[in-house]
Image (tube, rainbow, N blue to C red; front, top):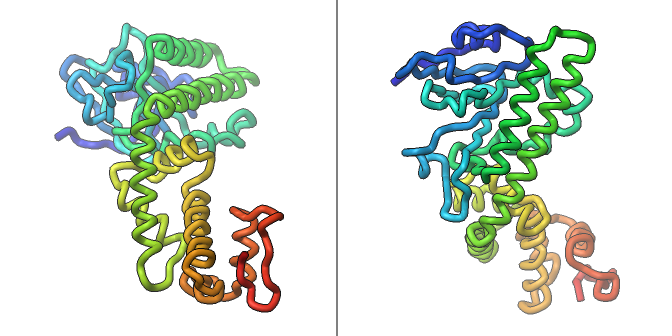
Length: 301
């Protein structure tokens, strides 16, 4: 087992025997390492990098529907990264380290929340087509070229714009990967539905938070960020919105088909004022034509 070092970007560059071209960005060039050398490290930075998967298809979550031309992984501050000489790709750089302060620049400050893939696990990596691989390598090389220029007032802006473009392409390619895995995503969603159905049928008080925890537990092979994206791609809603909608559908059945009072159902789901539940129902499910709250007893039609 290799020792895991805690490094700054400058210390990483020294380990790789390369100059520090920018205090907030470092290139990953495994070709700088000696043969049979592996560098394992962690630090306060995000990372985007290509990895070899010759013997690691399972580790990186490759599915039969995935492309075979390149695997891109994403890590966040505090995660462990291991690179070795054999990770070198065609003599070009294989990735970037990005300091969190870079996401405070004008180009990235409002987009960081979009890049949820930094919270994905290794087995949720991005598997690229040949064209996609070339695009990512081209973006990495353009950023590297800009880093090699003398620093001037435009350096940070141009680097951050380059990183934004790279990450936006990654968003596009992940969207394509989710589309290719639609059958698999539907299975995840079916598991979530079965879990919620069992949970809602239990006696005792229920809550949105507990429903989310149960779905996450049932799909523990997925990170929370990836699970949220699966639900978003398949339904257009966040996981919380989707579970709240399923909750409302169950409440609708209890009131309309089982003849329960709204007060009873509201108590089961932690709503101590039935009118609040009724208003939420209208917002999520009800249409104006069917929405009729009886002012005397708060029942739904």
